[in-house]
Length: 131
Length: 131
Image (cartoon, rainbow over all chains, first blue to last red; front, side, top):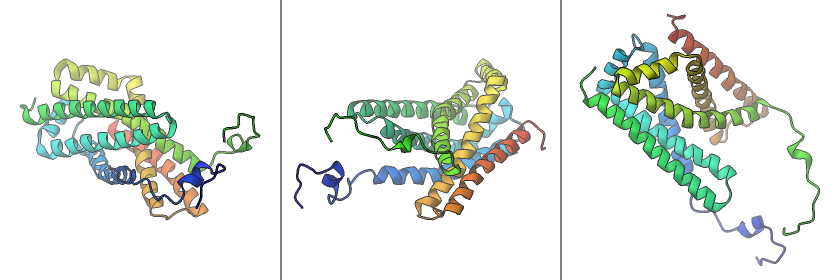
């Protein structure tokens, strides 16, 4: 197929096959979504069935491994899924490659920082003495 | 492609009406952004306040129990259930199923009905009306 001056961008791209990237991001978003379906349901169910939602009960809940471990998973998978989702949003609306890279990198830093803060707090609750 | 002459545009961007499927599509994105930004911020703050205890938790509790805090928390709960239900709908459509007009419309409406009912039920439970 010869490409003349009248070729559209779609015409040029046709026949070249996939971009060979992006599939992993798409699949990761789905896999983390299924994980969050379970972890999110656990979180809501926990809030429902804790005897009280006061500070003492919550600290004891997250001090025990049965609370701390799923919560750590919720934090890690939650931030990862949020980052993947925000990337879709940014890629849809920020087309200039430089700005796109800057915003996505900024979001990556924010997500890692947020997850680190939440995990630090969880570690303090899990390994510290229950208040 | 490079022509700067102004060309007539199709009116498709101005002639449309709301339908359940497009509403749910936008709600999925909006609720995802709300959860990514406000949801994870509140979660991290909550965990940090629990870990530090004392005045830190009192500050969080005061904010959470105020009118603005309640609006944010109820909004996040609704975002959570909406994103969860429309997310499951997305997983189904990812397999190529449920694109028939009737099924697609009904499932879109059901995610909204479900998210409102679950949010109301959860908060009535938390506030002690269903115990």
